[in-house]
Each structure stands twice: as structure tokens, then as C-alpha cells.
Image (cartoon, rainbow, N blue to C red; front, side, top):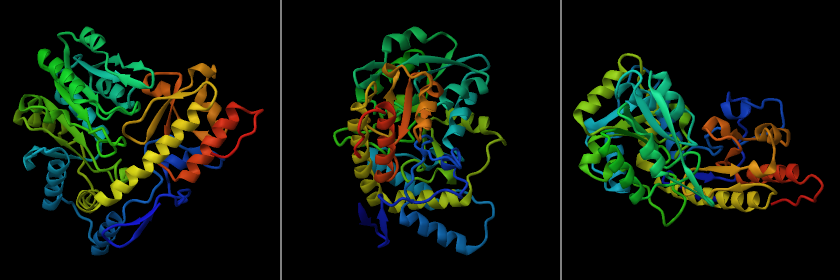
Length: 394
């Protein structure tokens, strides 16, 4: 698929870009081995031309000193959130961060005290489970409930997990790795739970810009009401949507003054500033890349559907429907394979293991890559699972 954006430049999501020799964490993991990496959550697409152009212009200036957030960036974020969610955010509510994982850890330090409890839902992105103990808190893991190919909240288990020591709820919304976009009703249930137990909510909305289902809409939990907003820390970034995670620019939105002060105090002098190229890329993303994002989502939707068709045809595998993200959560338990990561690496495909997300017996597949590469990876998986059968290309 080839399109142009406002710069008049072309972008082609089918283009296979060689990332070897670029110090890519994703690709260097298997350096020297014939393994297609579909594990860590960055995409193999070139970033939007408008971002590349903005970076080139900033670099040509030639001076890279300490930089505060540009005035235009805050306005771009405010405009984007208003247009996307009808969410009016004041500039002073925004706190800039060098990464979203930093925001998770700062939130754990900002709320409660030593040995207090932090609830999160599993399976989940690993830092949700590591941030509480790294902050001197106890992580309380509430398993999501699987209903056929859909994962849901288990409100009874959630209620049973709360104690007087519980101070913080870590929410992944949309959820990584199960691909759910929580409904307004589900978010209202969580908000009610937080209010009854007087909890702060830290909501990681980093995949909010990657909703694939046309009839589904992401709702930031802080937009439910002013009361919910007062107890919520919302973490956002352009990094996943526009494929710029290496530039390290994220932010927290906190409307409550005292909660925001606690968050910034917890940052102290430990959390570094965002680098100037991160700011530059973020502003270009929010101002000029909406057309690119629309084409990306259409392409990812096709990749998602391809993965679902192929995986469900493989013996012993099943996969949850992906409403958002570019990540498929695949159940391999019926295969009896003891170490699915090693099994698929041997077949030439690198996946993330479910144990890292708190649920062994699953793997996570990143389909944010050119379709020809994805087709080859799926062909290798099918061949490994059915070695004695013919294996046509997808």
C-alpha cells in the first residue's frame, strides 16, 4: 500500500527496510541467525515523512542544548486530545517524561507508602508487575478472564483482591497483550471500584491511537467524570502509534493539583528530561501525521486478520481477537509444547513468551511489519507445527 502525506512524500508499508546493523534491539537479538523478530513492540515501518522532515530540520540547526517542552507541542497535544476524545486538557496538567515505563514507576512511588499494594490485571506488559516491587510496593495480580476469543475483567476477583493497604490500580488501556479496548461500562466499573476503595488509577493509554476495530472507540478513563479525573494519572506517548519509541518522549496528564505535585516530587532529580529530538518528533506526529496514522491502521487491520486466519488454521493454536495494538496473543497450550518461544525460534520466528506477561502457555506476536515478512513468519510457524504436510504460502 502506497500513499502520500501532506509533505508530498510517499510511504509504503510493504517496503522491507533492513534494520540489521542499526543497533536495533528487535533485530540484534537474533544477530547471525535466520529468525524473523516479531517480539518487542516496535514496528518495522519507516516513521511518517513529516516526522523525518521535522527531525532533519532540527538537526540542521546544529545546536543540541538543554531544551524545555516547546509551546507548540503542548498545544498540539491539547488539540489532539480534544479532537480525538473531546477531552479538554490544561497545559499545566501535562508532565513530560522520557518514557512511559518511567511513568509507571513514578506513579508507584507517588502513591501510598512502603509495603502498600498496587493492583494490576494479568497477563500484562511486564513493567506493570515489576514497577510496584521496584518502588517498595506489593504487586497484586488479578487474572483477566477468557471468554472464547475475548478477554474480560473479573470484577469478583478484583473486589476480593482489595485490602486496606491497596492504594493504586495500574490499568493498561487498551490492554497489552490481549488487545482489548475497555468499554465505557467496564471503565465505569473500574472507576466505581477505585472510588469505593479510595484508589488512585494510573492508566497506560500508550496504544490509544491504534484502535483497529471500526466500531470500537477508546475512552480515556479520566474522561468519565471530573471525580474520576481527580484520582487518575493518564500516561500517553506518540511512540507506538508513530513508531518513534527510540526517541523517548512520553507524558502524564494529571488534573488534580495535589496528585500532580506528588507525582512530580516522586520524579525528583532522578528522572531525566526528554531529549530535544523527542519533543520535535512528538509535535510533528500530533500536528501532521493523522493521514499516515489512518493508512497505518488500515494496513495493521489487514495484518491482524491475516494472523487470525493463519493461526486458527494451525493445529493446537488459538488467538484472541485484537481490537487495538499490533500485538496478537496466541494460546499454544493445546500443542503440549513445553517451551514455545524456543520452539518457534528453532522454526525461524522470534516471539515473546507468555511467562513474561504472567501467563505461561501463550506467545505474543508483533504484526507491525511489512506483510511479506509476516507471511513468511506465518509460513514458518505452520511448517513447524505440521512438518509432514505441504505448506503453501499464505
